[in-house]
Length: 263
Length: 261
Image 1 (tube, rainbow over the protein chains, first blue to last red):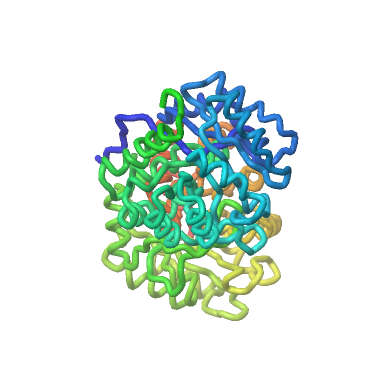
Image 2: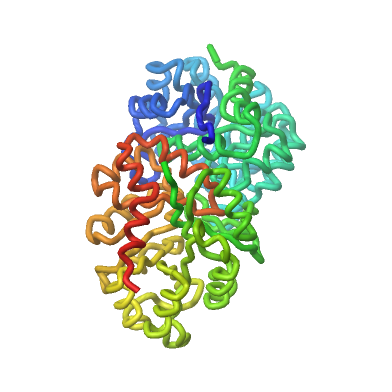
């Protein structure tokens, strides 16, 4: 019988919270998320709630409350919506007040703003100065058929700001070969498996061409459950050690370098 | 848990593989293929899948008729584990798909399932185009596999005209499609969906509670998706062992046993 068991807990570096984007899914608040994590063997998530990404109220209470209530289970990304303006002082204040924040989350396609456009520049300068973790949505094709976060724009940013740890959310789906090249070229660039891990042979290709140390696990939960994507890694034709790197150890290393308390 | 995959494909491709991302945009990505039936069996072996209801890439990408024949010739010798499903076309242009010609051929070759790709093959799947064929498929309880990749509207339309049709929804899309699928499960008793893209949080539990475990069929949507994802999701779903067995193989076995040819 094939062994599907893990003797360690998993860390999900690409996670959300709350109702999002007009989709239906049964459980989405912090309590529901932790229940699902317990059922699935997930120790820690790094989350960017949907209201931070799509609602202009700027309250951010969902993530700050969740991080306080579940300090060992939930960490947060501070989501930057360039359409609402960028306030670096506000970002600094939020990180000081909420030690659970470990990085920034960007969503260029959805915010219809080019990753290497002017509006993001102060964000990247700040992130580079503080050697921060940034998770950005990346696709090779954009919502309007153009491309706000394609490989060329990502490479442009990483050349200018080499001290950022940059997680390529979805690994530039549609340009996975280019994503692998970026991961090999830039020390701080990582391949995120969220959604993309389900594509047949992609996990194996990333490990072969970029090394398992450059691949991290993410799920988009609660829009998705954990099991399907965990299975895509656990069932991949790679070694046990490589699976553990992807599902846990790489994330721990990144979080510790980002100053995550108790990680 | 014995696994009978309802949706696996093999064969080489002339273009990069078309996938949909989670917003349903087509992206071209290089997924790993099983170019031959033997290669598909190697994947199944590694994942401990007992049987698969298969189709050949040529049935979609090249030509239905040529693809159907290619499928039969390539699974020769592997029929115990690889069960064929054919692509259907309107008989107004392709006469070999008329009920009196197609169904004896299906019987002769042990084909008990059909797939339709109306967008790719440039026709409308409705009574005007295929009335007699669809009536026969419905009466003989032949499962018709349909993908909503280009939208659910045509599936709603064909079921409105042929409410007893046995329809298996495959390649359902990555983000939760409950608002599109649940009404079909509620209205039509012979609608099912495959699990090859089914990753919704607590989705198995919800579908089993609302509609019964008889409505889900284990599938891998291979090679777009890895086989491992849907296997692990089914293994770990918080449902009873009886429900898991329904989904893993029993539902598909029952549907195929009810086909009258």
